[in-house]
Length: 338
Image (cartoon, rainbow, N blue to C red; front, side, top):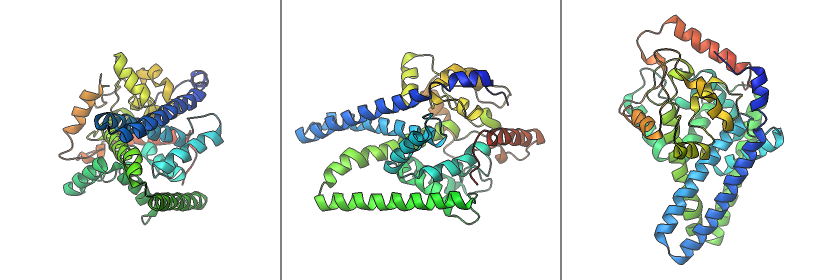
């Protein structure tokens, strides 16, 4: 698999601090919009409040992508700052950073295969179509809760692929902290009687952000049954300024094929590596010029939601060789989690 040359990698890794600054900018904007929402709710401006809730949800979605970058240790060159931001964002997104980091490894190492934990049950041939439809509906409607449940399933199920005792201990401690912290918040909200403000200033936008997160995840992978990074990933490479601004507001995650081709590349420089998402084989996905077209391509697959080359009756040896090559390449550049 073609990768970024080391000399170029050193060059592109310099903007890592830019990821932190971008995250801080988004967070300050988020706080400002929360203040505006508080005022609009007090003043009874319903339509303004609705618009602000949508904007806040979009920023919450962006923060979830920052959490993803922190899990890859590519948000900041400072490991402690990187993990602090990841834990902070993860806490309010009901996600454990060490759990996400450990489980997300399998999404990259075994992308769209039966060992891809994040795309269960869509990667399991023979699974009930109603199970897959129900899972898709649940993830899209209640992504805020469904996504943490997917990762908990990976950790708690029998024969969990996360087997390293030290990693499991860290995850348990983090889950205890997460649960205790949220119990304290809910008790405080109940004690002070501020459920109205909690509902509209946090819960409603968080639910919308969960939907956005799941929808983006599905645009990236749902319905694709090719092999390798480009055969099972949709990328959006927009030539227009509005498309590029949307991509920037999502930490350039729409250039998703770049991320799967080389996880070492910081998200804010993805647009410089669009050549990595150009098709190499007939089954590779061609980049979409806008999100609307990528979304429509994904929606057509929701009647029978499935992902992965294994859904085909016969899989050539070359396909599995490609999977193994990418898994080996990823494992050489990502810390062991199991």
